[in-house]
Length: 422
Image (cartoon, rainbow, N blue to C red; front, side, top):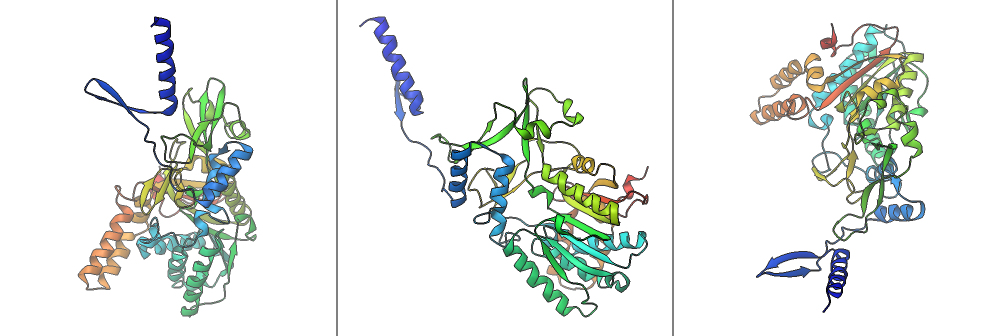
């Protein structure tokens, strides 16, 4: 047999093996091959819809993928109802302890007092979850009738019909059981653009982290965007994968035009959320024109980051492209980006860590008060563990940050941000 025939024969076999993605093992000086392939996970209805979309129009941005996963009317994660608490996929600070919402309420009242006690106040929450935070805030506010009676509207920005039902039930029960005042009304909106003109107190807790992001990589040809494509490989259990667009996209041109993105090196990656920019700008315009204050509490950093997209299902991290619609998708906030989006129309303070903010607002005093109200050792343990979880640097205390916004002509440093004094 000629060498040429042997080489061509070997090459043919090698190509066939590589195409089949066969696994090779060595045993008794002989090679054995297995044709076993990894089974794909369940193809959810939303996954099928996304595959159809990509097949028709080509790979989609991570932002488009996140919008479908979170808010698709038929199968979006937040469309199915209660996803919070021990029985859900994750637990938020208001679900851990009433102290969190109470101190947020006190902070809002302090802003009302500092800015001249306006006669009409509208209270706005973005992404109210179960309504727990709003209920805790209203309960503590009801102890301050001078402020409480100025509330002329409670506005909740919520896109999920199912969560809106939970909020409606909870908050209406609170109002019916609270005899202090029932003058205000509850309003639900799909977007912050629907809120009314007027002096406003605005809270966004774990709202911005769920907003869609774009991810870019700097190449020798400029910024290129990561896209979600169909994964047909037999060595992956997932139906989708990330690829780098070979050409510029509209977003890779417009979103990276800021001078701050000229300081990166080839190979660097960044995440940008244009939705976060637009919403913070709306908040800033509202406060700039009509007065008020805003508090943004979320996890993130005060600088641009990369590769923070994560998925949580049953209180565990899972692959970010796994079972779309069955996991909570989120990404770290870039607080410097939020501050930049205000375009100097308002004052911003922070971010400070959640631990610093809550301690400055008197969480240890409130904890002592609650401990004095019960003699149960078990209840004492629950209260202390809740406090620790909120403020401990190893849990939520350091990861979560707090950013404040108030009018440009108001120079007083807000409570909770005293550590920023020079």
